[in-house]
Length: 222
Image (cartoon, rainbow, N blue to C red; front, side):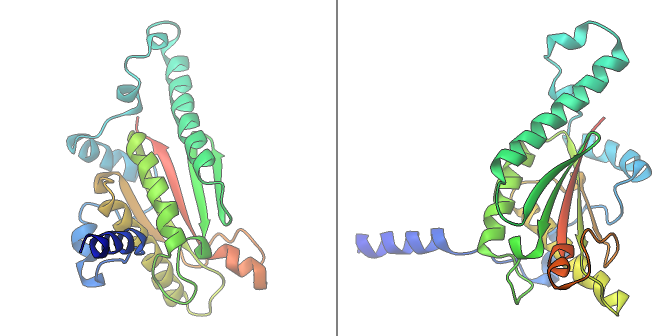
């Protein structure tokens, strides 16, 4: 009996993640902003996030004695850059895997994952590899919680723009549901499907695989 129980636990531990039924996604994503993470949407979301128990970067590094001296503007700039550098390094060190890259854009940090690094090859479901990658990202996002998160889906060139938008929105929402189920506050999240816009590779056989991707962009909460 003990042997059977041990086998059961082993099988459970190896089971791949399964997204909940799509009909329930609205519950998991309640409070998410379905828009671009721009200045206006961030300004509107900040008080909601703070009211939900969130904190700013200043609050996250409040005990840093260096903030007590020097020019305030310079200190704040250094504070944001320092905090996001830590985020970038943590993600970079943890995500040295095929199909995943971590990039810096000013104070923002962007994780780019091609679809094959996150989804099943022939099904709209998070793969075992994707589960591992997203679990790692969720752990770091919980550690560095003074950030907003934009989850954007992209695809390769498609004739039907509506189908392209639906495809990329499904990917982005699926990732959002995953992060919610792994402890990430919806008040931090922005979700958007951008269809075939903003290609990062040629629209040839290999380029198409790169253009089908999820980008997770992190912005410091000010």
